[in-house]
Image (cartoon, rainbow, N blue to C red; front, side, top):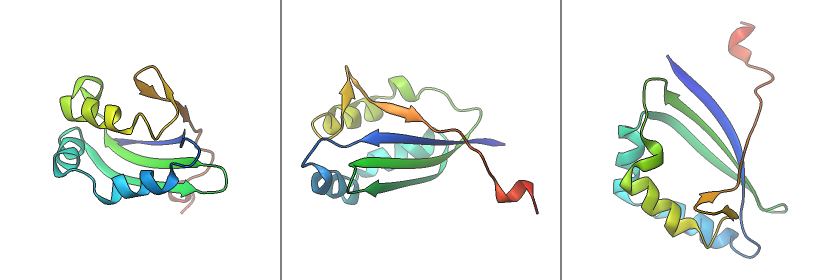
Length: 105
């Protein structure tokens, strides 16, 4: 069984087009790393007026190692000029799940 996570990131002012471009041209090795790390479903949405990014991901619960995976670290460094950062990490806010249709049907 996997875990579902949702989060917000913030794009630096004037960098939305670049954020979209980089994700449209995501490195094949980044996709491979995410799959190896147990990402089974990963969607990203941008709210252009606020510069917020909403991410929704389903990850295998047994997977570890994202924090030190070399490709993930390279991608974070690559995105540092586009995202609001706190040191080496994107400023990220976890979101609380308040409803799931699957629990009601």
